[in-house]
Length: 198
Image 1 (tube, rainbow, N blue to C red):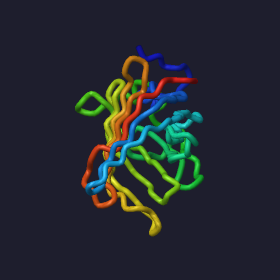
Image 2: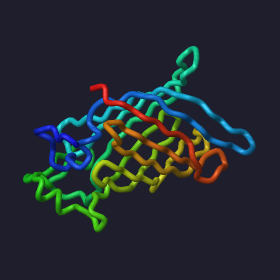
Image 3: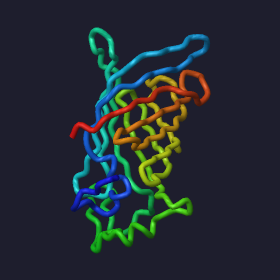
Image 4: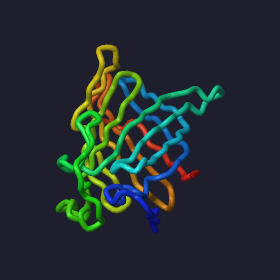
């Protein structure tokens, strides 16, 4: 059973099962040409909110080797996908006009899609010069995402597309990530099982 904390902005409620800090282990299994790369890693993921209608996301991963070698970090934002209106802040630091949009559960329910889920957008930034925009949906305690755009700096490694799946299974956050990178088509890359620590 998913417990929804009180006082959440209504737009976060469909994503509320993600809130908290999750930690666990996973496996990288990616083939480039004839070379299969397989590693075990640890990961700590945090989903939080600051009163605005989105989740803040951060992830830190390390190899499960003798040195617990730092691996990768990500940060970003998860939100329901909907058109921006006058009540939303921005662009820049411009405040939104009153009333704030989707301020009730009933208003958010009007955003349900034909599949009885909610369309979502996820923006993720990697320090290696890659910025991903995912679109997808949350339906109950499952999220399916696919990249809509990938931006790379001139110094970033080749990376062109990805899909991710997240789900709450027996109280654990499970995820799987497929990528198209280093000249390869979209294929299995990594997965993990995380337990809630906070």
